[in-house]
Length: 194
Image (cartoon, rainbow, N blue to C red; front, side, top):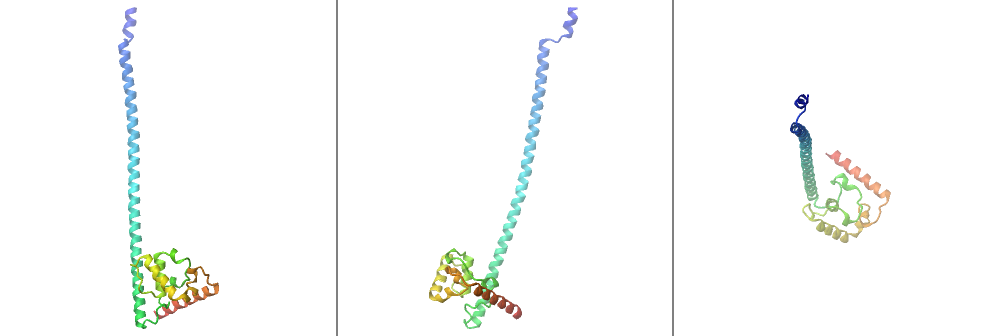
């Protein structure tokens, strides 16, 4: 009887071998799981990178479009200045400072101190004053200097409703509305002339 029980009972070595096989199977399953998780993370990173690449391309396109718009605005500004200088030359320079050929946005009263204005605003102020020695290649400091010299030479302009806001003086609502009305009439006349 003892010989029958010994044949069916596994030896301690067989038990150890079987436990090692089970342990190896768990390790293999764990490695497969870790590999699957790492592969999923890698796939997620690739998708994220692809999205970011598309976003960068879109941003780059938007920047190009904005740059083209800025170039077109600068071209329009140059064309407008050339037309204005031609019309001033045709009229013998008597129309200098006249606002009949200025774009509508230039008819609005200016506000804020001169030193706080942007370069584009200073160029608009200079062109409304008829200052031909200023162009868009000038630096802001030189534009500001020319404008200040002009106002020093013509102090009566500091009181004008259009420029009073630049010197801390408020123009009356009636003056501002009459200025806006004149601007509207001037733009309507230009449209009729065209």
